[in-house]
Amino acid sequence: MPTADELLGAGVVTDLVRHLGGRMPTTLATTREFDGLSLSDRTRVVRDALLEELPAAYAPFETKIRTALKKSTFTGWMIWPVTEAVAVRATTSGPEKEAPETADIATFDSGLALLADLTPRLTSEFAIRTFMDANLDRTLQTAQTWTSHEDEHVRRLATEGTRPFLPWARRVTALTARPDATVPILDALYRDESEYVRRSVANHLNDLSRTAPALVVTTARRWTEAPDDNTPRLVRHALRTLVKKGNPDALALLGFARPDGVTVHGLTVTPKDVVSGGEMTFSFELASTSELAVAVDYVLHHVRANGTRSPKVFKLTTRTLAPGSPAVLTRSHSFRPISTRRYYPGEHVLEIQVNGSTLARTVFNLG
Image 1 (cartoon, rainbow, N blue to C red):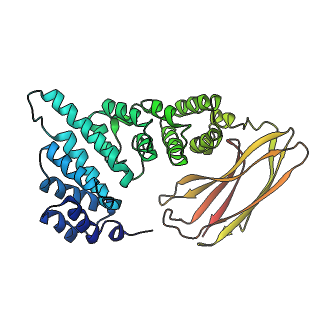
Image 2 (cartoon, one colour; image 1 turned 60 degrees about the horizontal axis):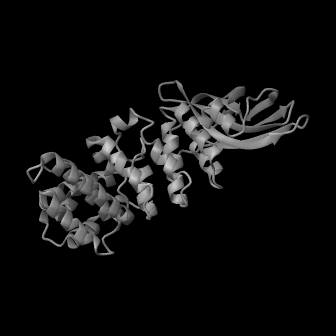
Image 3 (cartoon, helix red, strand yellow; image 1 turned 180 degrees about the vertical axis):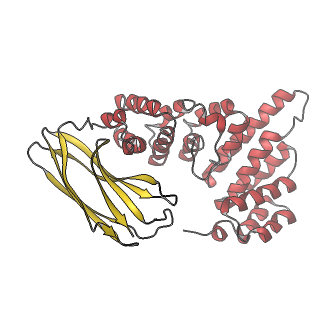
């Protein structure tokens, strides 16, 4: 994984200033503050310096950026602080002519157009949040026009930039309060020719499952009724969180009915006392009284620092069970330390989940 120094270090800032064609001592001096700063914090520091040294009026400011865009080397991580500066300038610059409302709207729209031109050089997905905070409806209207753009990066900006829970990005309160607001954008792109775009559509719909599961299922169902060859895979990816949560409507849409007649026998964990940093193995027998497609997960309820437990769902298998032909399933699970989870000693719970229903449960100790 590249470090912040490698992505946005002194050399990148120097290149940025060179591309912007001016003497910019404040921007160059930002690198003195970089030690200990994350990539996003560095971006904000450089953004603020750009806003201080580039023209305060939007029109000459944009001219500077567009002049740099004529160079193919104006690309990579130097673009992130530029997009953030564009967003601030386009949403806060005062009117320059006699018709203030027209001038403000024109500046706002010019800023969005500039983001679309910048996004192929890295991405404008984070900067667009500033526009949504300022005027959500107008930003979404513009994003809708991007869904037919010839450049896949711009089409992806329409869906990725408007994700309600975009990783690394701040939340837009007005957006999360209206989970259906971006569905027309997703409807326009779910059959896009680009896997890059379709992946974003699936992640966006999955984001919506946090607050609007019924809307997600309804949207996914509509897409399955008018699919292309890629739609089944996209829908499976979009419904992954609801499937892990055992949402019956999502499971049914994917062909996994209620597990009536399915049983789990002989769930065992070895060893029962797992040493810290070690692993445990579990096995069980899965049987059904009728032919049935099943999605089998296991759920580990990890002990937290305060002694309570927190569930985490892991995929195990999907298959079709035949009546009278039980299957034996075995899986090992490691408790080696990882950066995203800290393990605490105590009694942990293991559950076997079939088509969203818990069919077996046992406990084991982690030392």
